[in-house]
Length: 80
Image (cartoon, rainbow, N blue to C red; front, top):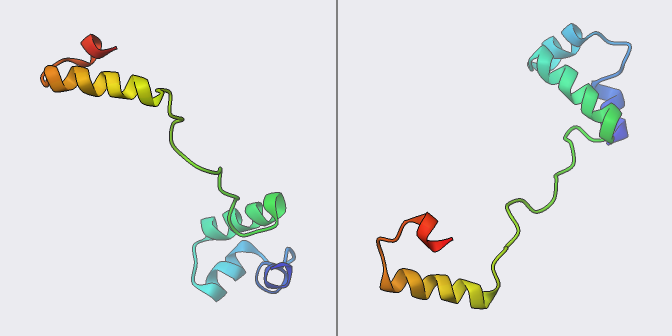
């Protein structure tokens, strides 16, 4: 990867030159340079697994499902 960076985004070349040569926006060149300097890759690392953690136990989930089974039009504030 470092070889690619050196060949494509050498610091002594201007953003305009790189943008014109590779047919990409100047903003993309600046962003890629920034990512290379911060992370050593053209893209930042992922933040890991997304989404919220499960906060209900299996037993609690079954209680809620039973409640909703008896009252299918219950509002959220009635369930909580």
